[in-house]
Length: 155
Image 1: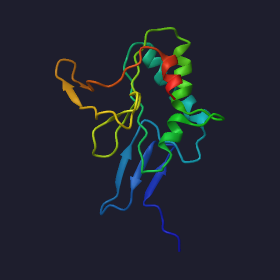
Image 2: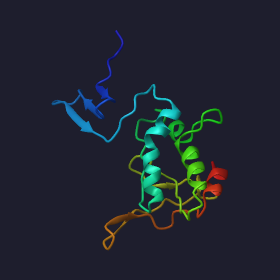
Image 3: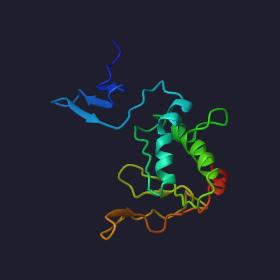
Image 4: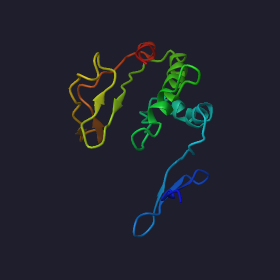
């Protein structure tokens, strides 16, 4: 018999339950997408975050999962079906507002990697710090693009 998945996904209510734990653990999210979700649906559901960016707030989009689970495909997509980053970048570019963008990968317990560095494979890990005045995480040394077109070129 095929092994059963210990994770129960309820994309209607935004929950994931881990039934493999001694006592089932339930996690709640703003939104959870099923593996069958398509790129246009993902973008439509995350578009309100772009309005938040355009109002001046910082936004983080997190793709989490096991190695080879589809995180990169969700974020970057393909030429035929662009992912969240190219779609969002095009929409933000149309706003003509000043923006600063960084793109980092957080590989497990290792320090973040700067994916916009000239040579990401050779780039030094980015230290994560905390600014007590703003009470926000800071990533000193991360490449920041001050316009969206260079991000589209980097993808």
